[in-house]
Image 1 (tube, rainbow, N blue to C red):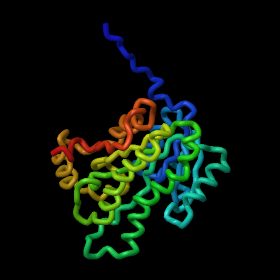
Image 2: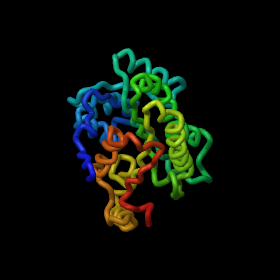
Image 3: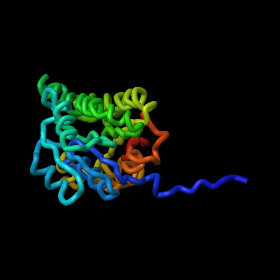
Length: 255
């Protein structure tokens, strides 16, 4: 006789968990921070614009940390700031990023370096700094934000695509390095969602409709579509899932 395994809410419990979210003042980072706060997690928002991250935090339980993560030594300063406030993140969401949308013929070295640094180097440097505390408790979750450009080339996306391609391999390498210590590393690769960065695309009805037609589901994403995948990867429910990139794109990359 088979034993039935009942899924309980404990698998998705965030009681006592603290989540550090970079790029938490807007877009996907802000949504993910709110989603975790809704489940009872303490939220630590990181961003350059103090007013934006303060507004994003609102009345939620947590703290804000205003600094530019692209500056030299920023990950060390962030660690000190967080530690001084008495926090130790259990979950890291690497959502800070930039997409300059410049053609390969015109992007200069400065913008190339800045884009790759923020989108690829910073996620590693931030995670690396906080992982030792996660090892002590034998539990941690690192969630990187990948992209459809992690596996496909888009027009005017050479620097962003190169960095996001690196994110998928970085995620695998993080998993290999840290999963034996109870720390999983996974990535979410969103499709087209309405955020500040994609506002120009959604402002054009024809462009938005074209993007929707390229999905298998037949519509563009709503930020709520990210809630389930996030809570899965950030919780005990994904304890045996690591090194993976989950495409949340309505099936666009499947077509």
